[in-house]
Length: 225
Image (cartoon, rainbow, N blue to C red; front, side, top):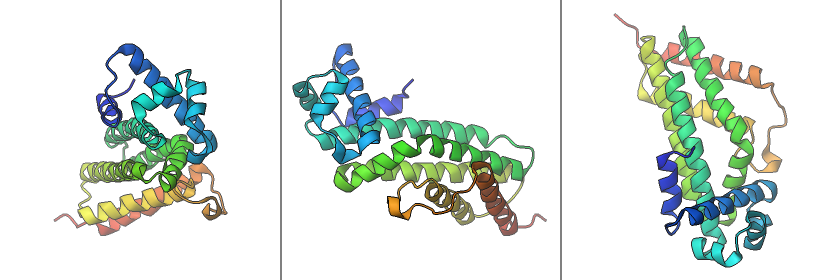
């Protein structure tokens, strides 16, 4: 089920759909555009092909979105709203779990990696679309910043649970490390030729990230007196 925020963000980029039938047709158009974007990339399909796949007339699509760039922005808004909501809910919940700080950090890392892994193909397509359709870049950047902030805040909750007093700067550095290394590992935001040559098993990769971040936080913690 779409969150209220997701619906607002997607609808904000398009004229309002005043009837249930119009909303349903818009969703079919967005679903079709997502499928084609993932399969072919932003430059690999036309509005006519979206029309054929969605079963919605070309004129109707143009009447709602105006241009292919606007359609891609609507697609990015809907899909990133969904991913953002899942990221926020998942990390906030996971931050309360774990019997030790190492266990808790491992759970956070696992949760973030699970979302990135599941959505990697779509995220790659959305990021690459911004190269050809710059108007879509802002929404992607906002999603990236939100994910990093949410992970950092969740890491802060974990540190407070275990009385590990670290600065906001240290939390942000740890969060940046997880995000940067994870997205590179999954080739999100990288051109094909820059993809990592060496692949690491997902479980081993998560463990290495945990064993990088946790000792750093413990080493940077202010001793309690």
